[in-house]
Length: 249
Image 1 (cartoon, rainbow, N blue to C red):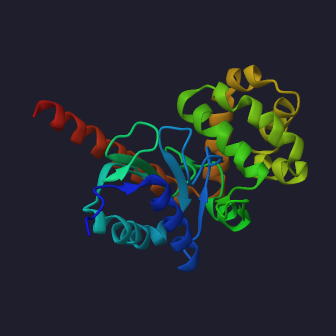
Image 2 (spheres, rainbow, N blue to C red):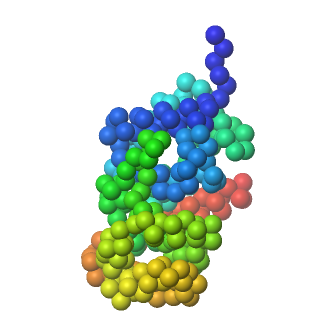
Image 3 (tube, helix red, strand yellow):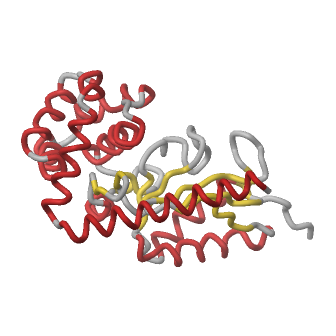
């Protein structure tokens, strides 16, 4: 019997999601989940997990890919995400001999929390393909705030989907999240801009939104927030130093 050279993308993700559920390892595919487990529309698959489970999730991945001589390459290790290349898992889009997977453990901007990952995981539900995905109000926020906080822009490829999500979601829950994470005044402004699709207005107010996020985090806990910010800074610095060393080599 000849062993297959590569593990098929679909076979890997079907087994991966099944094992995560059977071993009670909470997860949620935060975006671009429509084609899974057959294919992925984005450059990688973004999965939110609990930080305490990261070793168990990595061990599970190893168990699935090692029979195909697969290995895990950690390309970047940030405070909030572990970026992986899974070698010998055949990528469905590029036919490369690896596929990329992001294990997200915190929904934060430079250490400042903008959404509770625990709430996202606890409120995630199974879709028709038996994959856990976020609630409507959480998916909208993750589609909006990641690019806004880090890049200062609203990602155009998610605009149509965010409008659909807003028509389906629980308005009370969305407003509560925004008020809790950005303060009542800024939260109300963000909500109204989302309601009327004033995406440009949200971009214009990005500095105010970041400032409000910072104030709320420090008001909630000065010591914990300071520690989170420092930890994030240390992780980012390590990545930059490693990149510089690699370039010199």
